[in-house]
Structure formats: structure tokens, C-alpha cells
Length: 410
Ligand code: SAH
Image 1: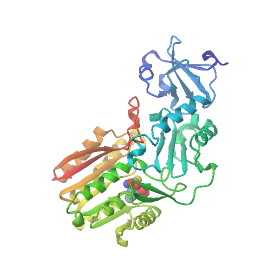
Image 2: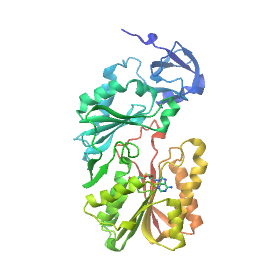
Image 3: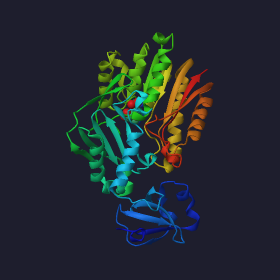
Image 4: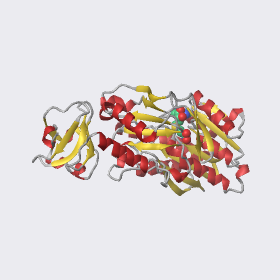
């Protein structure tokens, strides 16, 4: 039997133990005073304070600035295969059929494992119908990929598990992109899912992220209900920018909006948006599906004095890292300012940021700055975030990447 002393030990500087004691899951290179032993890439390590006292277990990556991702704060816990089975089972149970999250109305499409926030650092698993799509974001997960695939197979019996680890963050871990079938059947070209009674075609092979922006489902539903309960819905014009495969557009059309314009720079996404609208028995004119740049499109609308009742601004991550926050802020301000100018009095703006480096507080300040420059007034009706299948561990504020505001423009 292995004992704790058989594992390499990572000793932290005396003033850098607080985050670990508070169960934050990351140990940065600068926190490390010494490495005792020879940790394997992705291998288990014991993290200790400078008197050698145990703090936590984690997995190691010498190539990453985040040298250790922490897994357990219980010295007696064995980090064997059964540990990973228990962690997966717990995340899955939290989305189980008798649980509030699945009862939320999307039993076919949701996030099963939300990485650090489900105490499985570096692992994302999304479910689309009978298929699972997995992202291994760290070396520690990459090293255990076949174990995790086997356990997911055993616990959930999916038709197949597909990998979409073709993401930039892998570079920071010294990993190259990877995608393809991991086990079971190849997924079909498009998987049809049900989200609150709306149908969507998801391309898990080539679509963004794992195929669909699952995190936005409650915000899409919110847009649907705003219109459903609006006696004037049939007079409303909606502009869905960064519309991807038409998620918000389907809800807006289903809510009986008069006109819904979907803008995205990806021709493939717009093509699928068209198909998703049709799949739901809804109709939008051909010219209302626009392949183009949102920054330009908003300016065009401003110059031609177009007005909308509702605008959705759901841009991609403008800040990929802390260094890009300032330029990201300019991008967010630009689109929000333009949007404020295009909204009719009494209209609504749903505005989002999914940049981890832009906090909810900063995002609100940026939107405020845009409002002042636009010379408008607006009220916060609701603050928005990801759905409950994307929990945020309270010990891990970085997990709260998606933030949004529902604003009423006066
Ligand atoms: N709201 C969508 C998700 C949007 S993700 C949903 O609910 O499914 C962001 C989208 O912005 C992506 O589809 C990407 O193709 C698009 N995009 C990125 N930069 C763009 C730009 N400058 N102009 C238009 N679309 C852009």
C-alpha cells in the first residue's frame, strides 16, 4: 500500500498557504518554495506548508503556471480509481432525474461536469442526447483520460463519448489540441436536442465549445418569456447579435416577435440558425439571417436610424487573459454603446460577457459607461448568469465566467 510519504511533496511559501487552506483549487508557481521528490507529469503530489504539514492532494504539471490543481483536502483519502468514480458520480447525481437541475426542462442537453466547480479540475463533460462530449483541459485530466472515459461509460452507458479538447487553454498546459471519438459510436453529423420544448441541431464535431452554448439556456428561456407575457409581442423587433445557431432567435420567434434578425460572423452557424428556426416550425425572412461582423452591423443600423425593441448582445470571450481585459473593456463598451442607441424607449437589452477576467462589477461599470455616453437611462431588471448545471464553487470565483444584465432602456 502506498503511504502519503511515497508521494512527491510540494512545499509552499509560508505566506502562500491561505488560498489552499480556503480550498481554492490552484497552486501557482510563485507559491512554491520547494519540490521534494520527482513528480511525474500529471502525477499525484502532496502539498504541504514549510513545516511539512499536509495541506492537500493534487496533480502536478511543471509546464503550467498552475503547477498543482487540488483534488482533496483529506489526508486519509486515497486518490485511486474509486476516488474519480465517486467524484464523477456526485457531479452526475447533482443533475440526476430526481434533481432540480434536470427537472429544469432540458433532460437531453446539459453540462454534467463543470471542471473545478464540480471538484474535477480540468474536466468538462456535456451531454447531448445519447452522447457525451468531453474536454480534457489539463495535463492531469489528459493523463487520466482513458480511466475517466471508462468510468463515464460505466456510470452512464452513453451511445458514445466524443472529445472536443481543441481549445487554446491546452497550450498553457503544454498540450496540443485533440478531438475525435473516444469510445462507442461516432455521433451523427448533427444531434437533435430538446431545450424547454424547443429543438436544436447541435454539431458536436465542428460547433463551438462542445457544440452548443448550454450555459445560456435560462437566458434564452427568459427572452422567450419576456415576449410570451408581452401583449404587444407581435409588434416587437428583435436583434440577436453574435447569434451562433439561433438559440435566442428561436425563443424570440416562438414568443411571437414580429421580426428577429440574427447576426453572426460564421456562415456555418447562420446556416444552422436557419435550420433550427425551421425545425421549430417558425419562420424568419432570408435577409434576417445575416453573416457579418456585429461591430459593423450595429454601426450600419445606427447610420440608417434603425430601432429595435429588444437587443441581445452575447459576444465571444473578448479577454482571453488578464492582460487583455482593457482592450476587451473597449470592445464591450463599443457594442453596448451602439446597442443603447438602437433601442426604442421602453425596450430591453440583454447584454453578456463570458470573459473570466471581466468581473461582474467591472462589466456593470463598462455597461454604465456605455449608457452615459449614449445619453440614455436604463434600469437593471435582472442580473444574469449561467444555468444551474454550471455551478460555481464558492471557493473558486474564477468559475463565474458568464455574467449578464437584463436592462430596460427608459
Ligand atoms: N448567443 C449564442 C452564443 C453566442 S457565442 C447562443 O445562445 O447560442 C458568440 C458568437 O459570436 C459565435 O457564434 C461567433 O461565431 C460569433 N462572433 C464572434 N465574433 C463576431 C463578430 N465580430 N461579429 C459577428 N459574430 C461574431
